[in-house]
Length: 124
Image (cartoon, rainbow, N blue to C red):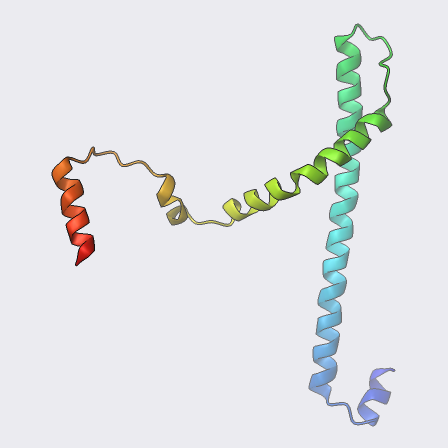
């Protein structure tokens, strides 16, 4: 249905705008996903070729017993295993400096008295 027909049949304009906006955002997300997938494929090919050339050089420029396609297959398998790690790392990338307080070491050594005082203060 085109916009004219939708308006003629009584669909409110704000509903048409909301539908359009939702579909536009979905299309943009799909395009971004496809672009990223194409880039990953391209970079994987470059990496596989570089690994092949590197190993070939290591063995005296003889032809390795595997192909660039074999390396690409192995890289794809590794990528599947990396998904949980990448998810974890993306969480760190969005974290603020204050979020790392657990990892921060204190520069001043605490005395037994300091530790007891903090403990008593936490009970109040």
